[in-house]
Image (cartoon, rainbow, N blue to C red; front, side, top):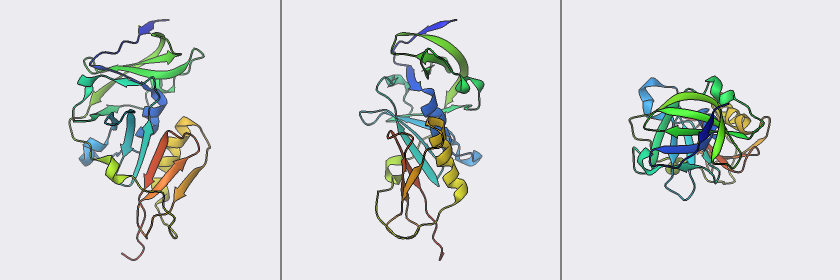
Length: 209
């Protein structure tokens, strides 16, 4: 089995594979909104966050402490938009040697999937390609819904299903909690039982429009 040396350089990044796949569940599928068709890897804060949004729903996942992103990976001020095929068999890899992480290099456009167990050298279990989308990801922090106690809320169940799929990637069949917005049609905060590293926002409907 081939092993990979995990080295932190200006062009490399190291992230949990399931976090990437979960965030992609909420990414846009519209061709005209190409800049939302990937996951935003953001490191403006102390912690690295992976963000997927499509204008109706958003999920943000705080990466684990072992994650890193090289400074030359950025294509905009606080990060870059990662585009890849999350249906690739490499994302389904399993290993008894550790959790599956991706070691990516923006100089090569290759994601190497490794079984990570707190070591510098890891067994490789898969490979796929990725690219950085040439676009500007919106200021997702402005979209974050507050946990407020509101009245009755309405939302599109198909949109809500994206959040459930994201949750199931991390840990299947775990409950989520929705906080109704302060008024009808306001964004709703979502909590995930699957992981306290995840947070979500779900846009509400206005019935009388």
